[in-house]
Length: 70
Picture (tube, one colour):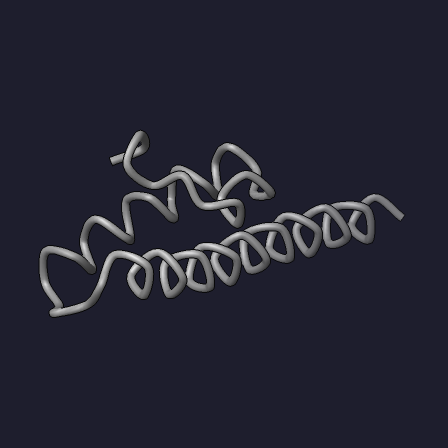
């Protein structure tokens, strides 16, 4: 699916987020009646939200560990 999805939006994502978006897009295409462009757009939004939550969780854990040291 990577070769068929050559949207510029995917190129601006980190490799991990891009991989997550492609897998979500594949799942959306299989389960829902969506066009490929709609599926990719929705998958990019979902993957970006996932990445932000993941980063926020890491930052929170780092801050908490620093607080425990102090």
